[in-house]
Length: 402
View 1 (cartoon, rainbow, N blue to C red):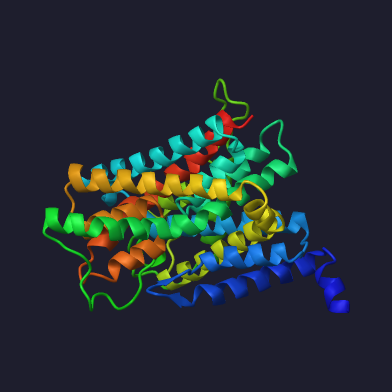
View 2 (cartoon, helix red, strand yellow; view 1 turned 180 degrees about the vertical axis):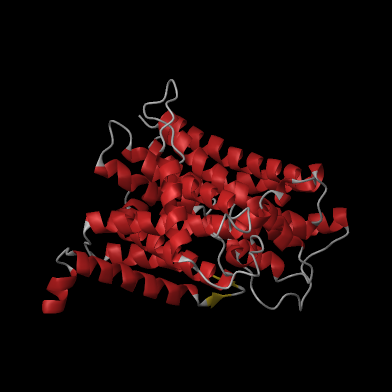
């Protein structure tokens, strides 16, 4: 049939169709509620894996371009959203909360490196596990970008982080929620704030809605400032910083560069005649488009080898390693937030969700209380966590991938 030949032909048009179909299917899947949780945007990753497994072979060049474009759009708009309140989040107790989040990031990184160094898991897979176990998409993009700069990079190596990410992602999304459930009764006895109350917040919350308040006076999107900001972010992200002992220069990359520039630019209401802020609804739309493009492309690239790796290869072992990273990171966050910072239960949950950038976990915690404690804690650590995870993934690649 002409349709089958066209879809499998590998042209740029058919590749765009496959990406769009994977995204639409994934968003539909993500809208289905399982118990009190929706997969949300993560459904796009799984639909991409499915279509890739079914043998759809998109153009690799178009796939990589679309993946990178989606990542840049997503991280830049995240920076625009969190920028106005970023400095305020570092004041007073917010600084200690971000130090706790840094410990969570460090725990996952150390475990990922140990997995790659002391087991038979390849280091590119281990850095994918680091990203998937904490459901952090920008760190995966940073790792993939850093890999391409290595002198010994191969296309086969470039697929490995996506495989590790896809294997670890499901438990990474659910493992934190399980940790919250387990610690609920204990924290209820020690802090005076027990488990979730029925009849709490009726609307699920995501990181896109609560990360930081945007400028309420901003009612239009300026295309000039959008593309100018992205251009500056790419320049900053691509600037090489030679570091002795590293096989390639250190760069902020596609993930951290645009986000950092957006945070700086939107820290001011206006710069001359230009405003780099944008309305929350427009920001939300652009972010969802960007992250959907990225996850669809990651799933399509990894899908051809995903089932084989999971069933006949080392996928189950990789999944166990990813689960260990998830649970250890969550345990460190819970211990420090509960016993060092002495936060209340729902604030602990919000901090844990933010330090692992897990929107479904935030929605779960928020649905059990009428307070905004989990939302505020999440918003406090989310921006810096995104930057730390992107840079950490890149450092793992440059220091340990051989």
